[in-house]
Image (cartoon, rainbow, N blue to C red; front, side, top):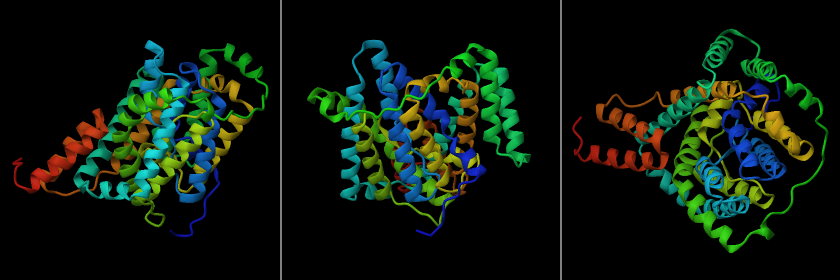
Length: 379
């Protein structure tokens, strides 16, 4: 790994916020619906971001695991079947699984089985899914969303001032205009220093079992496609002087999940869309991850009880713009490829599956590529 130093300038700071489109909605839902401790969640994210920024020295992301988050939030809301202890249990099991995949070398061997056209299809599909989700969020207030997207595109093309800084400032102003009472609520915020509690002693065997069956195992295919294969390829394509390996990424995924679960945090991964978002808005080193991590640590230690209020400064239209442009950046990473018609078929069909389910996309892409090499596909 090259001795590239981390940067701590305005561009890195702007790029640090390029993954808010996934971070804020999931964290807010975990806090409000699952009733998890915001201090533990934010401290886990913050410390993990600082560590990966120092180690990888690229804008390496740390995101909530989406399948686990969606299952925990919807099941808790509808049937009260899953709770905060179950989420913590899923984090323990997830951490152990990824440490095992790293220690045995399985992470690397499995990743090597995926053909290049199938990998490009997974990356393209992930980009499309981010763009679609971004459009859905912008559609909640279409005129504002369209205006913010147009403003951001102009700023990205022509302004020397980081577009993300202006986007967040305009978004906060819109939130305050739409909800004037928010000003008084923000003015009433006071520091409330506290540490999260150690979560493992409160776990039961049921928490571990339910967390494994309903949360950890269904997440595995998505993490394998998005947060192992795609992030490794995305990092090495963008930063060939700071390459990472599947084994190393699996190891860091395992460690950060054990750490997060220990302090009451949520399952986390290194999603490729997160890096695309950081890079889209200016990040080029681990400084972006470190600065975002330091901010989240400060929020977790001193303002944990007010974080839900602070998140209201980021309207869905702003988060939608961030997600949409992160998806564009990610999908552009799949522009390379063969001119062979069958290879293009594998890329495009795998991308379509990835919009629906990344795990199924990996399986389909592998089978379609092998079938094409045997002459079973005639396109």
